[in-house]
Length: 229
Image 1 (cartoon, one colour):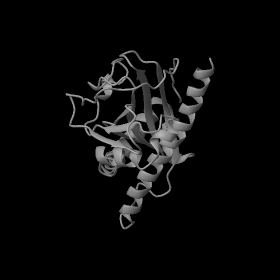
Image 2 (tube, helix red, strand yellow):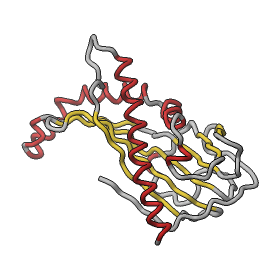
Image 3 (spheres, helix red, strand yellow):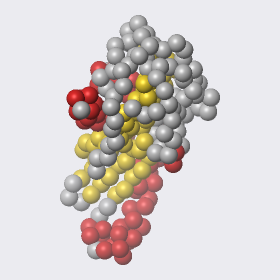
Image 4 (cartoon, rainbow, N blue to C red):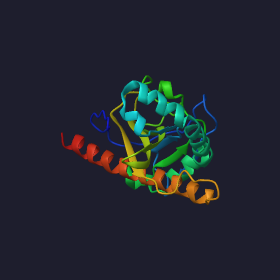
């Protein structure tokens, strides 16, 4: 399911200073070209989720409970494997291996500031102001909200990721917000005993990036629509 909220996208202006969020670990700045004063702050997901469903899930509430009990051990192992393969640094590294500036249609020279400490998931939709202390007059955020593995009898295995982009412009008011899932199928993860575990980890990272590219494409479409409005 795709959820999005959008307002008019503000112009990307100039900035006078960069400050890190006092509530999180020190942020790391990276810019592909000469900094232009604009900032994109990036946070990883706090938690992983796994849901393996079988044929019992189609037999009402009792079947669903039995299904969860039968697959509880598998889901616990999947969550542990995902937390290792897609820990905070790995999520940030995967995103920064992509051209975030182009994918999100930001100004060339925008500085990417990574925050190693995830935001609390329960605050994701409640906090409507900037999540860092930066005073930049050209400020945006990219937040990874959820990483979700799902296996279903008919549809097979997939990894879904919930992302959120928010543009504040020069103040504390959200000018544009887009929150949506990106999702793609898996063929290797989770690996079984005797199989190549590294291949499963590599696949998670690859699909995580594909999920963002899918999300970013839809985000750009939403941005363009609001610009024309």
